[in-house]
Picture 1 (cartoon, rainbow, N blue to C red):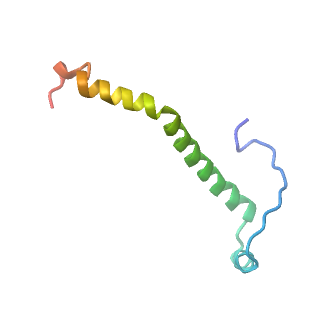
Picture 2 (cartoon, rainbow, N blue to C red):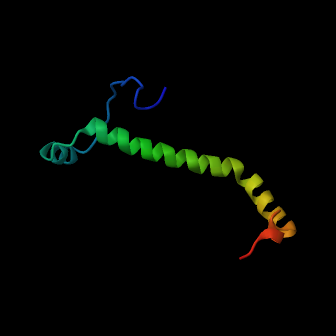
Length: 78
């Protein structure tokens, strides 16, 4: 199920009362803003986790390229 079609679940968060007042003054939709920002943070964390999980394979591939070159070296014109 994609994030946009997933059911919404009520939750509680605690934030500064001054920040909440400012957000209300500007008509900020807290649920929408939080969901958008959390989506960005989760996407970034997943990317970081993927990089950590695959670091050894990436380093091995880079060493292989350094030692043996690219398969298409003979065809490159630049």
